[in-house]
Image 1 (cartoon, rainbow, N blue to C red):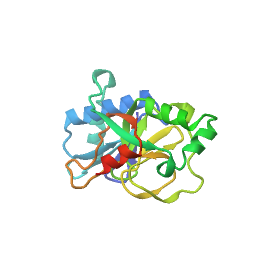
Image 2 (image 1 turned 45 degrees about the vertical axis):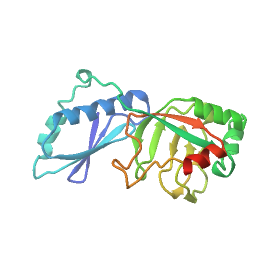
Image 3 (image 1 turned 120 degrees about the vertical axis):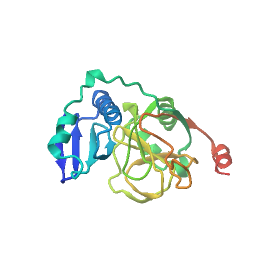
Image 4 (image 1 turned 90 degrees about the vertical axis):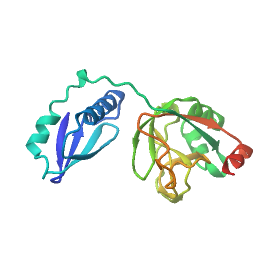
Length: 222
């Protein structure tokens, strides 16, 4: 683990420069360590693929003291089991809701049907939530449907859009600009300020995409 400063109130704890299961497991174990330690002066922390951003109050805990406490972390002593829920996400693939699915198929020299079957047949895990409120970055995309980002991002990607970028897949929680290849859309609300919690996912949740047709989509929109 490498620790870098982030201003005078933050730290970045890096476990790897790559995205892989080993690094992410270390992130999850350190997240549990912080939860259990309840270090006074630590305000919050945000886990990502292979690092954790930690914010603290230097008036309550000094940098040197905090560093000493963080260095007490012994990964081998932390038992971690993924306890997330399983969330099924209905998706209408292709057509006007998935304008880039043919590109994903063509760049990988497979059919659109193959893309749908492969994408919906995989098991995913939420590894990070970020970029915008509630955006889940999902681990588990089969490499056979990897696809590059758009050369020029769209000014508007509708909420619920399911996209692929490189070896990642995710769901746009709100209308926003975006550069991912859009292969479908879910009628579910991924982010809803009227709910508590407003975000559908937590880090560690498992996700399964379920293909639906237009009638199924319209029914779930009611």
